[in-house]
Amino acid sequence: MKSDTVLRRDGMRILAEHLGIVEAERFVMLINSEPFDYTQWRQQLFNGVPLEEFLKNARQYSEGKVT
Image (cartoon, rainbow, N blue to C red; front, side, top):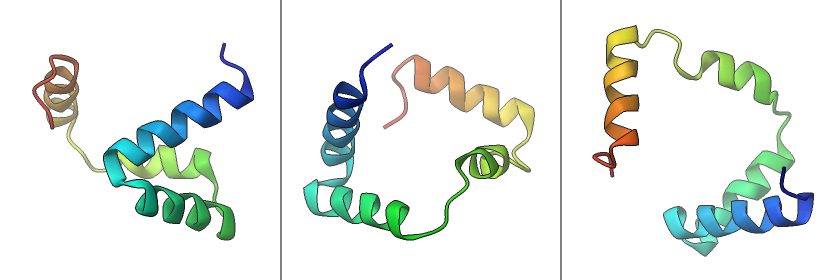
């Protein structure tokens, strides 16, 4: 398990790589400023996505075919 410091560093690096530094900082500010229930969000994230579509997308992602 990574330390909190390493996890924060890696998380910001990944966000910055995919969103750009400005949007990554904006994302962090949004998360910090709004009441946010991560567990509820995760439970609803794929709600309504058919299992076959979810599995196809997961397979493509694991094979590096998703951008």
